[in-house]
Amino acid sequence: MSPFPTAPAPGDQPVLVAGGISDSHTWNLVYLQLLLEEHGHRVVNLGPCVPEDLLISEALAHRPALIVVSSVNGHGYHDGMRTVTRLREHPELAGVPAVIGGKLGIAGPCGDDEVAALRAAGYDAVFDDSAEGVAAFRRMLDTLPQRALV
Image (cartoon, rainbow, N blue to C red; front, side):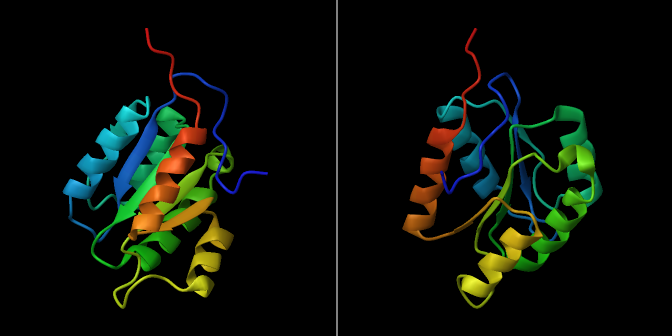
């Protein structure tokens, strides 16, 4: 069994990319969008400082293949816990894979307990901002079905 989330059946479902609610950084989101597009995915980039209600409404509207939450400011753990808790309250979104990555703690990478808590709250995968975290994210992208190019 793969340690990475599996996406719904292939199609033109986009990948939703969002910055955490307190994170105003944008270059990470641009990088993620370009990386996802290079891997053959259509992207809906919601930008920085995304409130949970906006993420939920866009997820309900787009029925994405994957939701990616990114953090650069170090508050990813706290923002991410709140975001995924709200997201998973919606039965229609219960099966949508969601991942979080970046700088998740202000004191450095999250420990095993924090990663386990993020996963227990509803994230399918957690990636830190290390070279291995980026490599693991890229490997996960290789497992997602790509959209049909027309």
